[in-house]
Length: 324
Ligand code: FUB
Image (cartoon, rainbow, N blue to C red):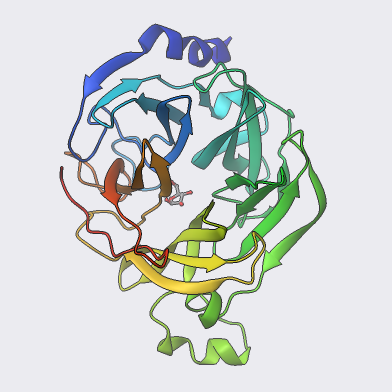
């Protein structure tokens, strides 16, 4: 059975390598990094770009972990398209979270009817084996918009799933983490909330002034909370490539207030950027991706990380990409 190959790999191939430079993994491509801290270790869940394609032709997801941000252990490929019988292509961005000792890995992939959908795999361990929790997508509304899930559990136990390309949606997850309550809500975007609007062709007044904006929400949301403030980092569009920008709110469902760019279009050798922010052992880190591994580029992207310090008012400073 083809699934067995991927379930067995993490246990057969866990290897440790020292990579104190960017990209943090130098043995294969690791796009769309989503960090998670669990029991003294930081895990990074990523996609897998394949050399030689001129599109995001991706078929599997990877996990690496570290205890010191220097030595990285490769846990192989716990899930692939073959782990989801409804997924036919485009193993795109994903994020994993722990709840009550179980690990829920939210992924997006192309469905047999050529739309994108969000699914969830579950495991008793952060490195698998993972199994499709539902045997069908969790979010499947028959559109291209269902990509890039980000998941967050608030202090009161309520979990939120956000996602979306151009449009930004959320749903309130039930405690089982594999179903949601109520309706899917689309977040209204404006210059005040996310810097601007992307979708041309809409006739509302704000869009008519779009040329005034120098940022818009594109994709890759990343939701978290710090000191009672909610942060939504996302890939924005500025100039010719994506940047990382963020908005904040006093509630996990908004209203969101645009706060500006974190990482602007630097020579990352990649059109997209996508990442996550996390605290680990008393330090704050921005994970993102670049096309800077040899033979990399827009379709050969790799995880990079920068340590940073929040400003005294809780805002995120501008963060420069480094090679160290
Ligand atoms: O990796 C495929 C897609 O590219 C992701 O889903 C987007 O966020 C962009 O990084």
